[in-house]
Structure formats: C-alpha cells, structure tokens
Length: 333
Image 1 (cartoon, rainbow, N blue to C red):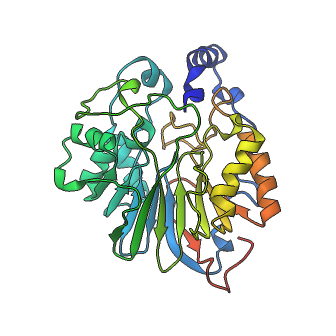
Image 2 (cartoon, rainbow, N blue to C red; image 1 turned 180 degrees about the horizontal axis):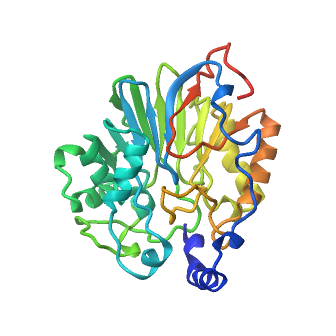
Image 3 (cartoon, helix red, strand yellow; image 1 turned 30 degrees about the horizontal axis):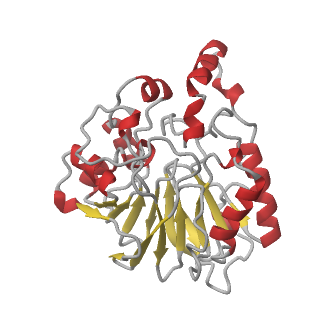
C-alpha cells in the first residue's frame, strides 16, 4: 500500500485548505443498478455475509461464524500519519452492535498492517474468537493481552475447521509496493506508530462449506497458479490501489483469481477510505491514493467478457449469498 501513503501529507494539506475532501474523490456511483448488491436478486439464499469496510467480512451459516481481519477502529489520516494511535473500543463496539455480532469462531487476519490486524486481539476477546494469523499478527494481539489460548499461528495449506466451515490459507503477495515490510518479533504495545505495524506474511483464504465456496483475496495482487484447482463461485476481491496498476496487471489478477476459480459473483472489498469511521457512509479512497473510476471501468469490462457479476456490498448489514452451485440459482446475480 506504499502508493497510498506516499502523497498523503500533501493531500492532507490540500484537503484542509479546500475544506471539502469530497472534491478529491473519484465520481463513482456504487449504488447504481447492476453494481449495488440487491438482496431481492438472490433466488437461492445460502451463507450470510456482513461487510465492515476495508477487507473485514463476516461469514455465517447460522451456527458458526468466521471473520477476516476484524478492523473497526479506522483512525483518521492525521493521527495515522503524524502521531501514535491505538484501537478504539467504542468504534469496535459500535460496529459489532450495529451488525448484531456476538459470537465469532475464528478471525482470519490477512497480514499485520494496521488496517487489517490492529483490532484483532480485542475483537477476539469480545467475541470469543481465535485469532489465526502470522507471527507478526499474533504479536499485535499479544500486545492487547489476548490470551494465548485464543491465538493460533496460521500456516498456508493447513486447513482449519469451525463447524461446517473449512478454511485453507494461501500465502499470496500484498498489493504492489507495500509499506512497512518486515516482521513484528515482540508483543506490540500501544499507542504505536504506523511504521510499527510491519507487514509479515500475507494470506488469502478459501472458505469451503456445503452452501458454497468463497475465496477471499484481501490484497490486490496475485501469485501465478496459486489457485489452480480451486473452485469458488463467489470471490471477495480486494481492489485497493488497483487503479494505480497497469491494465495488463489488472487483467492478470482477474484471470488468476476470478477466471481460474470459475467465479460467477465478485464482491469487491478494500476499496473504501479506511481512515473514516464506520459511523459514516463508505466512500472510495481519495484520488491521491487510488483511482476507483479506472478500476471499475476495467473490472466491468472483464466481468462482461467472462459473464461474471460484480456487486458492491452494503456496510454493517447482513446479506444472504446465493447458492451458485445450485442449478436453479440465478446465473446472472
């Protein structure tokens, strides 16, 4: 995510002078027909999914629930870049209450940057979940005094089971030019600086369930042939800073993650400004960080080529995913 942060100080000054950050955002309408997720289009409901912005999603079958990342604090740009910061328990509590989340079995953390891992330990303590992540991620949770019994080192290729959920982690690359590359080798005590949240390893997750498979790729990058043999009708696709990449990169990413897995429904994540509270509507990253309009134009062209639907999820609201393996399911959803 290096490109996001490189121009932030100048951008912050511009926003302060203009008094209107909206002028710095791309003009995209994600509520438009054919883009917004419409529950009424789901003819055969399956797993439920709740989106919390960035790449935090909750999947539930009514009996068990798994979450990615668990990032809810979303510190604003000024403290994020200029001072030390820490998790905001009020914001965590607000998000969990709004989405009526009480019990979670597993929190699967993609990597140890702040916008993925900084809240994972506290969320685990509030929901009874086990945190699955890299050694760097677990050291963030240890700094929040999360019990060792709720920490589990994630290893690529070794499935974990929660009820009828089977989850397999794949080590995949972070989006190009990441910041804070390295590892966290001791418990991270807060408040901490942005640079303290070292990347560590990065993971994607294949979630298998009798109601359908879901592939979750939080970071917009690919490892060639990583998902060969994987079948996932639904892909939760990270698209952060994809608008800053070449058209060829975007097409290869799509082919490796969406086309090869046989996906028919793509749910974009990590497109929103993660420095805004979840109490506010989700908006795209500012133009200095990404170009959402370019991303959308390219993805829509690829989706049309391959007969895939792209839908943007509402925030903090549970929706039902379609059972796309069912021959009676709506093929166009």
